[in-house]
Length: 345
Image (cartoon, rainbow, N blue to C red; front, top):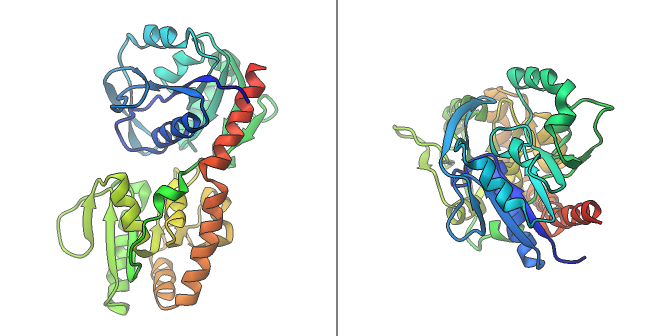
């Protein structure tokens, strides 16, 4: 494959942690190792990342969260200028204003990747835009989605959607450290759909059965005793905490389309306990222990069982490592490079 100059477009602020942002930056890193020339385009471009900064972001509500999107009216001009010498644009969340919608019409051919599994309001928006979808997607040649949950909101029969899951730098999640037998980890924003309250309710009972158990919460910060609250953590701290945990809990209640946090935990060697959401099952299969969504009692039983069963923890951890390897950037990035060459040849 010849080297390509590829624009990777994020509608979300790249300085804010998020699944789409991580995929854009991770894919850019992989492409550089193969000699391609990726240009990252989006608001909040981190220092040292080659690309075009679309300026400050504005926050809007979306899918049970608050999303930071490009809000600078000069974005159109900046995207068009950046696109002038690109072979193609890989636009993430192509229907998201401002950056992604503008990029699909900037000139070069486009690969459009859908990430989200929208809630009720988002699904209504998709239905309303169906008659205009072709026009909104502009120069899109290939449409991909990170999971079947992300693809199912798109009109069946009108678009060919290729499922390409999220990627991960698996090696970066593996830290040589002692794994603590009673350590349980959570990673996520303090939003209702992330299920932290479900976990905290369960934890009160888990502690009574397993007094030696310890819960570490990353990504959220509350006052009070109980768990170790770490707030927002950097990538190195995240990898170290996951690599020293025996069990990782993903108690999300909905709004998920993939489960990158599960993948990170599996890559780090933790046994995963997760809500029985379709995207989580699609990703993890038999490499996780599932419990009914929102059922804190079932979560108690699952965590207590695993903390007391070293052999089962090892089985889940090994199965998880195999799943993670299948999603390493050396695999997923290679699939995208084939698509890029398909578009430009």
